[in-house]
Length: 329
Image (cartoon, rainbow, N blue to C red; front, side):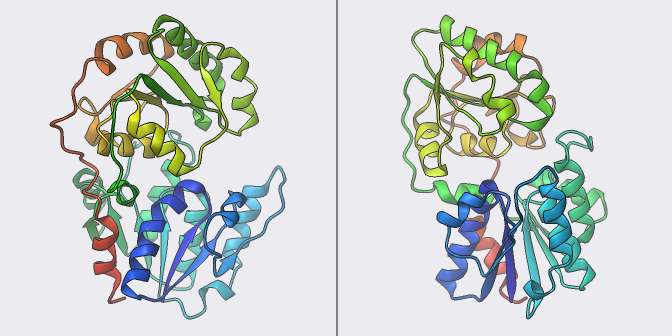
């Protein structure tokens, strides 16, 4: 039986299409919730196993340690699926390895080749690759990265996040979506917010909207955004509504780059690197410092036409391909 693990909202969004496809095919599976984003318990179907860890300064360390010692979740399990690059995904893969249970890694092969960017995600996904028997890659480049590392069991399936978008209709408005929150950018977040605020003042014909991240280190700078509509965090469905109708997006998120490409929305990526290089210079551009943001908005985001471009991250059928691969496990 397959054990599907998740603990964060992005993980759940990406494993949900696999869960739904397995239900459709009546394939047996169990789910394990590792507990980072506890609000998921109110939104998702009840997991078979739940890891409950109290809040505290070392909560993530406690989650990792608890996963490694969680014997009962692996009873009758023949394969463990982990998604992406969280520390809990790595811990679950390691726990499965200790018990000689095969690991299937969803969204495998992404690389920046800098273990501190993004941190700790780059280390986590490289470590999971060393433990996994099945590497479910979103693109040719991610598969090539793994083959260069000598990995076997490499499969190109596309990214499951796109499976959620097959029925989404796109329109164009004067809204600009902004999401900025990454851990490695927290020391600079007020500089990015200041630049976004200047942009909103300059482009009065555009409505800049920023769902504020709940991290206190982000929220404390929200007062800078006097020309921006700051709103509460959005659920995924609500966020996609905004994304599908916006003019373009400014983000430091990885997954949003893929969703924006599928919906053919220009994406300015506020990071030094991106592991999703396939869309660069067509669907997305990097913005390494706030001072470059204005030029990219005026000379790229407001001018680029993506109507004839093909999304490089998949065709919206990844969960079908994945279930074809794992049905014999």
